[in-house]
Amino acid sequence: MIQQIYDILLEKYGPQGWWPYTPKGKTKPHYIKKNWTLKKTRFQRFEIMMGAILAQNTAWKNVSKAMINLKNNGIHSPEDVLACPQLGLAKIIRATGYFNKKSIYLKNFAQFIHENPIEELQLLPLAELRKKILSVKGIGKETADSIILYALQKEIFVIDAYTKRIFSRIGICKDNTKYDHLQTLITGSLEKDFRIYNEFHALLVEHAKRYCRKKPLCRRCILKDMCKSSNQF
DNA sequence: CGCCAGGGCCTCA
DNA sequence: TGAGGCCATGGC
Image 1: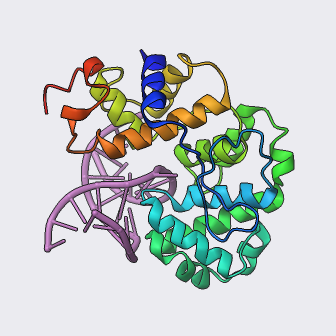
Image 2: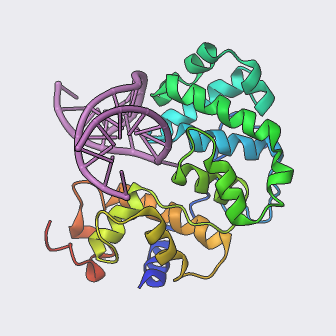
């Protein structure tokens, strides 16, 4: 069933090109399709990590504005973040909302990367890596997993509010399902490949935005045949 | 206008 | 350990 959902969404929407980051020579984040063999620089990986923090409960359009602002202010590295006064940083990321909190979170995380360079993190076993990242104040499970999957390109599946909504409506899990439980469920049904985890999560977000909204558009939903809730709306 | 967005922390039972 | 309050801008 879960594999089938992935196949349908990919067939319908196509590759999503996640996570957006700024290509060489460009000035703002782009979705880059078929980038599996493209080697990301350490700055691009850090950019994705900052984006994951700024995207917490925030529309991507606002995150993109903040990313452009960061770049225009010369903030590319963990050391740049650490050198920037917190109030200044908050002003730069204003458009994402929660800017006072997020500016602190960014600094916490920048300090963490400063002490644990990306090249070293990539050598750690997955469980240890996740635990270390989760120890940073401001990084919860979803943000940690987004960082691991999209910036470090390791095999971990990201669960977000959209994923819970879609899978609980279909009937695969309960609406109050726990993060780790749903993650295990999905991971156990898919080939262990970071490219598939990458694509599936992005496809779920796209599907939730288009049809499986808070007020869902079940009439034209391509998953309605397998969804136990489709007749309730 | 009101609603909501690619969450996480803190507090208090 | 779980529910509830809080953080906050900008697009639609």
